[in-house]
Image (cartoon, rainbow, N blue to C red; front, side):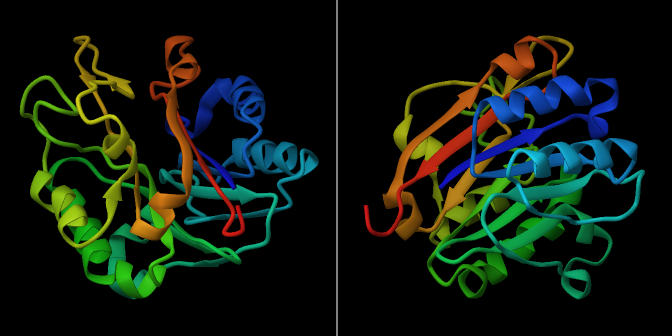
Length: 235
């Protein structure tokens, strides 16, 4: 399975057509969009993806003003939300259960407000993934001096608890000394905030994992896209 995650920036705005062109260009099997909004752009995105083979889709919120998570795929999946556990952060996570992989798409809040979603993942991912899944999306955080030049991130302890508890930062595990950023501030400071954390079983099946910076550099969004290619169990 080839996965793409992309923060489309405030629902896509007037950029929705070029966003779709770039998403389709990568020819992923499954697409995870963050900062997706259930507005008129949502109809355009869903219809165009459907026409291109993404016949299954789901979003984490029906509120047109909330930035949420949207998953579309060429493969059948079953979705779940977690309103009792996440409460006001329900729109920030969407769980998709495929035949041989479980995917949690996420869009984290700013600063310390991220803690609720981090705690949920750290407490529940073993039961959710059954050793066969990944967390993918915009985490809005990373590690000091590795994923940013300085030390401004919030919730770095919770971020690293994902690894302590058994998930693998799949890109970093293959790029230990590299500084590569997926978002830049207005001051020109770079940050790697779009991530994929996998169970060991899925991490071993990853053939390629990389960022596509064209989307950010051409101002299609303020984020780079991230792509991961995962071998089938039989490969």
